[in-house]
Amino acid sequence: MLITSLICAQESSTDLNARLDVTGELSVRNSGLWIKPSIRPEIKGDVYLFVGWNNVASIITGTGEKYKLKNINFDTNQKMFATKAATDSVFVFSRESIKQVMVNNKMFKRYSKDFDYDYYEVIAFGKGKEVLKQSFKVLKKGSKDPFTNTYKSDEYVLKSKYFFSSTSGIKEIKLKKKPFSNLFGDDSKGIKEIISEQKINLKKDSDIVKLFKIYNQK
Image 1 (cartoon, rainbow, N blue to C red):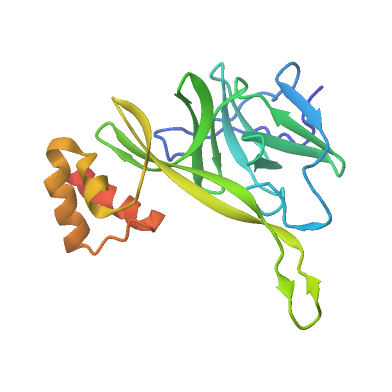
Image 2: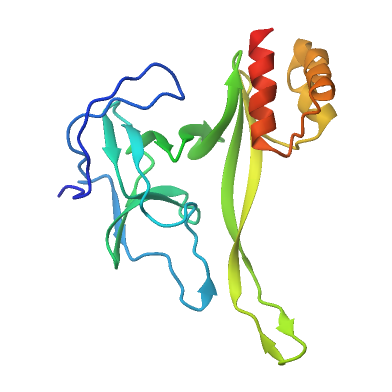
């Protein structure tokens, strides 16, 4: 059985942020599970990372093959990528099936942490170091309206955790100047200077990208 929304094309690939070569047909046999969409009408929003399914993704499989898919999303509950074949049918890819995905200008890679595979968004990288991000959704209970004495709908709220990857492995980090800078070892002083001089806000992904751009040029 094949994903019917497959797009076949040829593209060039040069580095992590480049679009990937696309060849062949992406088969779903023995590579995941068909499930019903993770949607609950009584709750505002859903567990998927992206709004809607009209997302074009360049994919590298676990065996190194490259493909392109036009209706992909990320299930933050299952922590796996999924494609929607029909209104009531979603195929969730196993982690062994997909190694790397570029979708909506965001790069996701599969990493091993604590002997388990998981996906992380690559925010910035350089000199053997990477800042990674994991997005997930939590259920926020609806508050009571004191005027109508009724409750607002529960809703899914997007949250994030950040991680630092280096030769010593992957660990969760806090985006504060001193502990963040210390992750760079002998380069920690230089990182502190960049943060101060450029007024880097570590709470902004774009500022972390800016920091690494300067760091990589030194």
